[in-house]
Image (cartoon, rainbow, N blue to C red; front, side, top):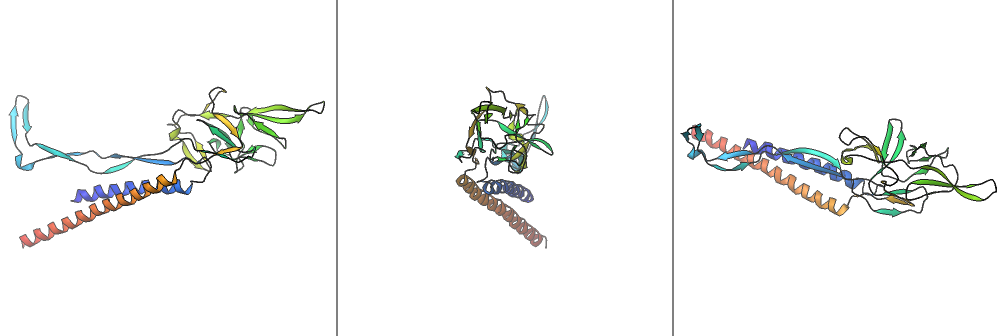
Length: 273
């Protein structure tokens, strides 16, 4: 009965972790390129149950053996295994803004921050005061040759991530000039990237270091679009209902165990008296 308290409590705590992840997902359902959090659990070791009345010992050449038959297993609860990010592709939203870029496929933009390089799928950029392509927080977007300066020129980004600006040549004619190529990277295990807020991620020992993608291996870059979050609000709401029901079920396990223990103590006290 006391074990039921611990088992029920571990179940309630597990559902709390799930609820926190679901609430965070729903809060960011409209955030560009947001990737949902997923919680997984693992069970504590199970215990074998035997019939006590058939307990007995017999011997064989290897020594004594417990002959009590096994009647099943008893679970002892669950614990949090990991909280990871699901990087499934989100839908593409058309914005018709030249400053908005979306990645169709696996990969990340690279931005420069005071804490070093960080990585993002959010291609909703802006033009900084000095003509650099930046995130909404003012972090410069990185090309293969460093921060990318566009100035006030009209520019286009092709599907390979090459940035072209329209400039006048010596004859006064307009021509496209290659400024730089967007720096795009990938990781060995991207699900273990650490979220840093503002749609930014940092690498970890488990995710591995960023690997720069070559022209032929990079995702398709689409100008005038942004990537939507990969959160399905209907699925998240259904899971929230499941969490509430599971939480209540574990709560009833604890209440039932408490009731049975109280009854047992009262009966023993009555018999002893």
